[in-house]
Image 1 (cartoon, rainbow, N blue to C red):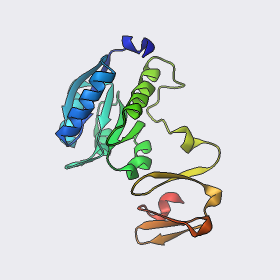
Image 2 (image 1 turned 60 degrees about the vertical axis):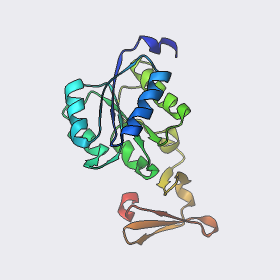
Image 3 (image 1 turned 180 degrees about the vertical axis):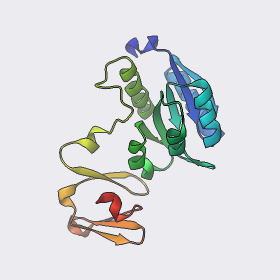
Length: 195
């Protein structure tokens, strides 16, 4: 892992399921023993307390929890000196995650190589090798100049060229994207999100 061994990183994990916390702790301990897990929490309320009390550098944050969302923690936390890697079972939250200064977005169950990439991205930044120190890091495939947008469906994220969208239509609180060859993609967000 190169000079990453010299970095002392305090890590917090917030997830409403104990088994997910344990799996992530085990993977991090095995792959990145230099990371110090300073605490775990199982709710928005205890997650806010963890961040306030321990001031972690990096937080692995579940999105959909019993008493709210991981996004609530990012918004409500008075301490802002942490970076976020969202870990969730729902790929449909990916677009929202980038709006909440996500460094990375992992879909459960976490693949080992994805976890390594996420932590390496963080370590690159703290070692001063990144282009900036900002929390927000949109994947290059999303922010490329090719004018693509991300359409989350139930199982994956689809990146489509804007020029390939024939039209969009409202279907209740959903948006239906009509594409070439009569393909349609239904997204669980209203049309004004994409306007």
